[in-house]
Amino acid sequence: MNTVCGAAELAARLRAGGAALFPTDTLPALAATPAHASHLWTLKCRPTHKPVILMAARAETLWACLEQPVLPAWRELAERHWPGALTLVLPAQGALVQQLNPGGNSLGLRIPACTEALELLGCSGPLATTSANRSGEPACTSADTAAAAFPTVPQLGPVPWPPPSGQASTVLAWGPNGRWQLLRAGAVLPPEDDDPPT
Image 1 (cartoon, one colour):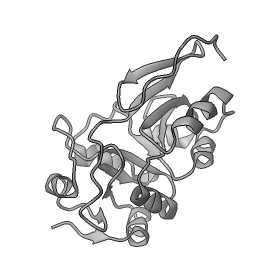
Image 2 (cartoon, rainbow, N blue to C red; image 1 turned 45 degrees about the vertical axis):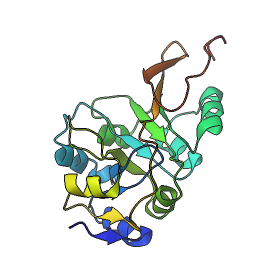
Image 3 (cartoon, rainbow, N blue to C red; image 1 turned 135 degrees about the vertical axis):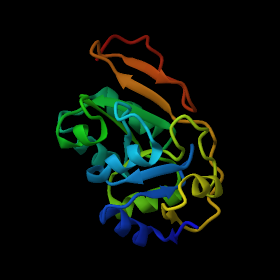
Image 4 (cartoon, helix red, strand yellow; image 1 turned 180 degrees about the vertical axis):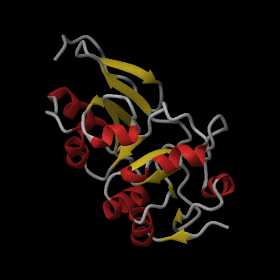
């Protein structure tokens, strides 16, 4: 049976190197601190070439993690949809890239629109996250199904969690041509691409 913890206790477990399960507005998340993101690939039996994303409670926290100048177009889209079901994949550099996207040069960023998730992220700082399911299996949609998939991983309480939308976040990547590229359709509509590159 999974241990159920409050936000402060679960954040302490994460900082000590453990993994955690928590609700979001889209689907439940499996998380670890960036320094221990390798746990996520192991727990999910997920190929290491598939990156995980970085969640935080505040946009400025995420911008700082890119370790490069933040373009106005990125801020504009984030201000419109964060907190919410939008993941932005942006050029990045530094140690976090190698921890979350080994061999890559970008980071996926999101602020979830879920009070419980934001409370945890406020206590823990940015977390490496992925959907709470084993690779190739359907996404978990509740605390019970997440517990069944990962029986040794502690969960954020209280349970049951608020019902998620069940629809994954939209994933948009900033291309080298200065335009957004839709990587995954989801709950948020992609922006109109009528404007010239920024």
